[in-house]
Image: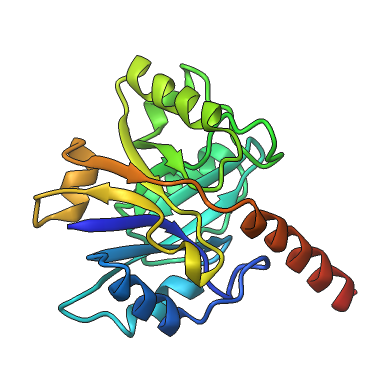
Length: 213
């Protein structure tokens, strides 16, 4: 079982891939499932869920920008309404969702959350490999934080384009993916994304911002 736990569809301001296409690409990439984690909405995940088959599992999620930095909720059923860190955590937990901190300690992304030891009690999983981290050192720091605070690891491509889907994720022998994630019964895999991808994402976001002013 191979899952990419961090992907974005056209429902993210900096994404453009159709949810249906994401599912098809995930199958071609040899994945068993993907988590669609669009920025501040579960619309992409819900749309992709319609194309779920016995061959591919779709997990509904969202990457929420809070007052402390970005937090991902996976296994969601409803939109997260708050933008305050603790309230977002509470909303995710109320849905029996899983709290993930994506690309923590990334010194380039201003939206990255830099969790403290105090924050660890509210977190389920740390993204210890993100394909879009420009420096591997940021992933290494995340891995060290997870180990020091006894938190389970997770990984994702942070795909915004088709060619990134499946670049990173987890492998497990468990048939219950949620249980595997929460118990840490996973193995991380991943490769770095081409620098062209995050640069293109920034340009796309800037273009959309100008277009809709």
